Image (cartoon, rainbow, N blue to C red):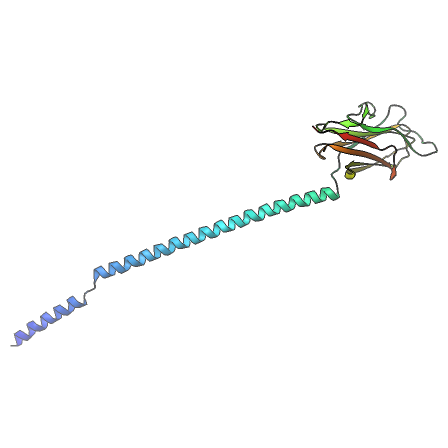
Length: 218
C-alpha cells in the first residue's frame, strides 16, 4: 500500500513539473514581436531624423538665399546713394605745366567728351557728342588755364537727368596750361542708350559749357 502511494506521488510530481515547464514557443514569439517593434521604432526614428535634417537644410538654403538677396539690395542701395567712382587721371599740356598763376582766376577751354586722350599731354584727340553702346570708356576733358593750387576739380556724370557717378581731384600746384580729364568706364557704370551729360566743377563752380552726349542703341 505504501508502495502504491509512493508511485502515485511520483506521477503527480512529474505531472506538475510538466505543467510548470516553460513554454519555449511562446517565449520565442514574444521575443520576435519585441524585436519587430524595436526595429520599427528605429526605422521611424531614422525617418523622423532624416525629415528634420532635410527641413533644416531647406531652411538654411532659404536663409542663405534671403541673405544674398539682402546683400544685393544693400549693394544697389549703396551704389544709388554713393555711386561707384571711376579711376581719375589728369594730363599736363605741353606748354608750361607749372608756373605762377596770374590774376583773374582759372579759365577753361575746349571742354567736352571724347573717346580718348593723348598720352603726350592728356588732352582730347577729338571731341564728339555720340557714342556706341559698346564703347568701353568715355572721357570728359578740359584745358585749364591759370589754375591755382588746391583748386578742387570735380565731375558729375548724369544719365536722364540723374547723377550716376561723381568724383573729385585737388590740383596740387599752380599751373597755367593744364588738361584735366576724367573717364567713365562701362564696366562700372553701364552705358545705357539715351541722353547723358558730363559736368565739370572748379571749387564747386560749374565749368561752362556742360558736355551733353548721346549713347546710341546697339
